Image (tube, rainbow, N blue to C red; front, side, top):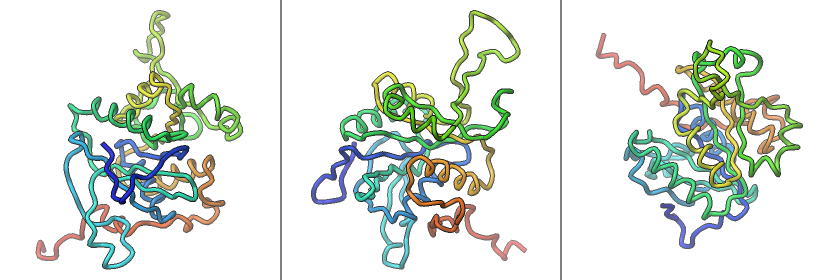
Length: 262
């Protein structure tokens, strides 16, 4: 359930919600970090659930010593009211046996909050691409019928590439098998998209084919792709420093090697 950190519960009516899927390379989470940090978004609450591995830590977006001492939880909600935008940042892995329960919680919260649209930032294993997916850009999108009704023209103008359906058995041409949606390494991406289609939720998925490693460049690619649609910043690709890197990124790979080892 959503628990507000303010005296009165915030209204999300007609807001756009952006959230990551915990997926390969954590690209979606890193992209959301850039959005929260750059837009200086305000924390308005958190999602209380037993579906995520419980953890807590210091403020990942701290700008001074006082800020750094705040405690933060695995699933927090931030808003930029002037942009009518909310962000759900997920910082912990989903417990494998509770993936379906977590998707249901998200869908019910999104419906109850009245978001005008939801955008899921995700990623998928580059090495498991189908032949047709090797061509062109590594970026793909999915959109539910509910959102397509109101965003078809915008998506057509952007010229984005829709996620291809692939054969269930690559290499075999069996007329009886329908091509399927396959997002290896995408976490709850496929399930959340399928649930949203069934519940008639206006939801889009933006994803990037990538590999594990240093995924900071991938995060910039994905957030710039999102910006082409939502116009959060003007021409950030021409001035990449417009995206503000959060202080927590200095610890992405842990601290340095202890000199005592040598």
